[in-house]
Image 1 (cartoon, one colour):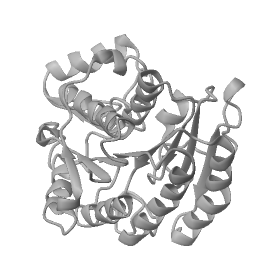
Image 2 (tube, rainbow, N blue to C red):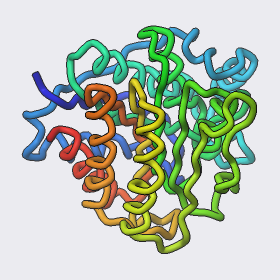
Image 3 (cartoon, rainbow, N blue to C red):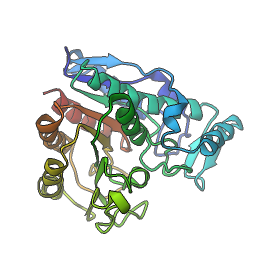
Image 4 (cartoon, rainbow, N blue to C red):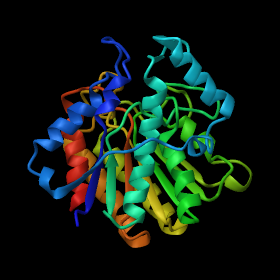
Length: 313
């Protein structure tokens, strides 16, 4: 049995954002092609997601909003979220497919087909709110996967780790009052979308189950290593998760055009090993990683390679 699954569908390219948009239609294909040709390809299990049951999308988004996205796409090439988040006639279908890939990842690890999985999907999801799109995101893939895992597999505690350079405000909002999902984010701050201060810790029963570690511009792996060792690991040991989900953005790379953090390709492998250590202690190594950002198309596949190579060891 392969330890690591890679979940991908060629239709991810059908969400066409246009040639000038950072979230280019071939982002996931470039990763897929790079990994497929790499030395580790034969060590992975390869899966495709199928259609999603919309009831899982409704676990995190209102039916009015789901219909709004669907109807906007039917009108043709358009924009929502003040022009930042572009749609085409296929966007609704492909956004659903991206959420389905995260669910496929959960099924793969929970049914012991593989110990962990990387979902090479687009569009990304962690900015998507309950009733609005934002930051290239339509449906919150990681949040949908968390709700699915809780209901389908009766998991009590899920840890979401978001190392995308932008704060996962949509994911945080989904679980801000929920003690069953711990949300950890290390991100450039202050920066888009403006949220993610260390003072944001949850509300109500969720107080203390959100942990933001803002990173200064120019932060290096030393900053992230400190955040993971001193903040994430002690918290995870207290929380004791049944499953770990990673919002795996690769836009903290030093060559990414949308941020000013200084991580290198191999640094994403180091972060992965730190997360694996937690997973091996508490949840039989079960990790589902879902692609978020990463907009330098040379650095992106190389960074993902380091991530997957660490997952499979």
